[in-house]
Length: 69
Image (cartoon, rainbow, N blue to C red; front, side):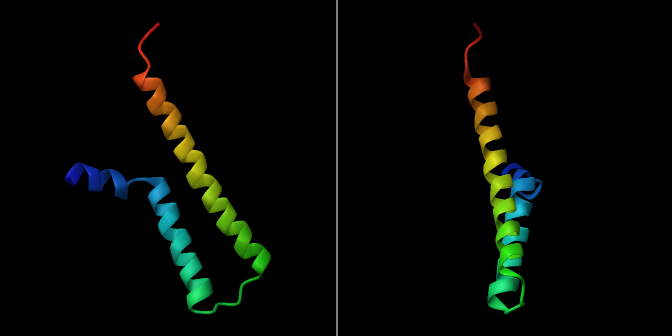
């Protein structure tokens, strides 16, 4: 359990998700006036990074599980 938490807190995907959530909360919840185009570019960039890294992780896991030829 301790190792799993350490893994999560050192994950770049986790921190990008936390920063994105904070950005959305500050923008939407507290009403900071931010240009909508910039807002969506930042959100799209964060999502693209998270999904891209997830795809790399899946590919790495599949490659490890393949038996040697």
